[in-house]
Image (tube, rainbow, N blue to C red):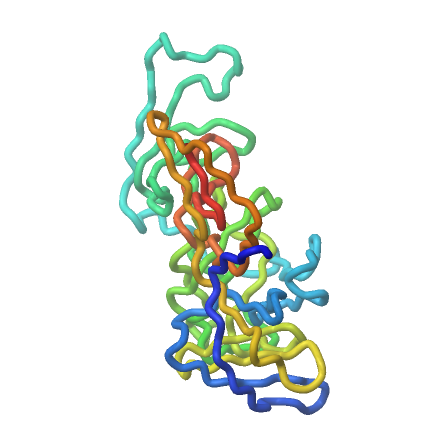
Length: 307
């Protein structure tokens, strides 16, 4: 028999109908005192979709490809705040011994920038914050500081709870942003935490979707956790009430950490007969930029191994 290592917390739920008319099948349960946040949810071992717009017709387990997004070119983006974290400090290796002459006019000297807008990274360092970054369409890293977006289901009562998933224009990478401030009258979302998931910046965003607002709970398989009332709402993708014994909130991000060093490496360890489940999302965790590539990386996983 296989053992299971789970990062989830099983909820005690008592479902009550919330909206079960007109084709809807939305149920609610009080989950007070059980969890503080709910970035993800599993129902009978299948991931539910956090209430979002646009909807995902086949649920979060099936990719929409290039669909299920809002056309970012039609929205008004608020430009970067270049002084949000203060000035960047430049470091360029001008030693002739280290000069690279094999890449023509690109990447000839080792250079980085520390701080400034690269303060979103851990460590706060990136080639793309250096003084003269090279490469196709190269310029210093930056991200938009917000967007003016009028949702067909808005204005939202608590738009400040929303999370934006934004492609960089041309879809080189994507960013995730929490909302720091929401102006309901102007439909203005000011971004807060996030924007550290890609290495290449831009003044504006590309295609995007928005999640974690109650007004977007309108499709089978979606859920919404109201942190103010500590109630869980679920649009059950089935008939009748949702199950009561298999509602799990993924929380722990690293289920197994196997760490050694160059001098004391891990040896002789085997993981057999184990099933790993319900590890928490990591996309909002600290990211770093290890190279001059287009992406940032986070060092978290259900099974983490180094050394």
